[in-house]
Picture 1 (spheres, rainbow, N blue to C red):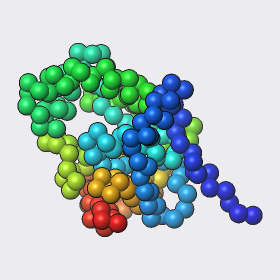
Picture 2: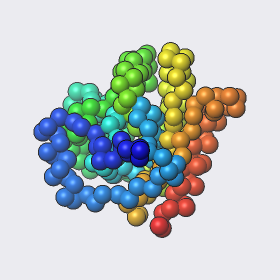
Picture 3: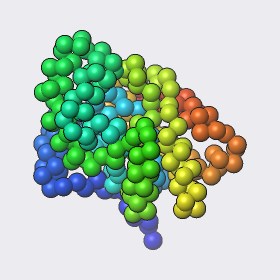
Length: 240
């Protein structure tokens, strides 16, 4: 009997009102071409890493990625207005998107409420740079146990977003490591790249965490290999 592709049209479900907003947004955002180099159906309860491509990447994945998933994202986007405004004006718009400070403040004030609604709608899992990260892992573990995949943007974007990725943080490796320690299960990690120029998502064949661990590589080394491979995917498929 032919195995049913359980991933077919299995888009993530959010709250009804947000789903209606997404249906409206799809009018303006074309569905990307998805190239799955692994051949087999994408696995649930896995880690998916990809480039951010500024604001477009998260939106495209939210609208069209064919799995039930939750994003990892910086906690400021789910915090109070003051914290969110400060992050948008100083870090995201000025340091990453290179807007002049005066313009970044104006734009941040306008978009802060809308972005809060968006990130609340997608049920973002906030990440932290202190002991609150324990809460991030606890929530993430619970989602993985339910078969929900986790989509992570590991690139260092402190000086802006680049098509040629310059550095990957190893947070996704730490997640896989801690999950293996606490649950005894080796997660699959999928490396992806979203090519904005031709609206294409390229998904590499999955890597098994335990196999990577047995190669005696550090988290930083594994993250670097994923970054290099992501850039290869970009150059191989940017014009296809």
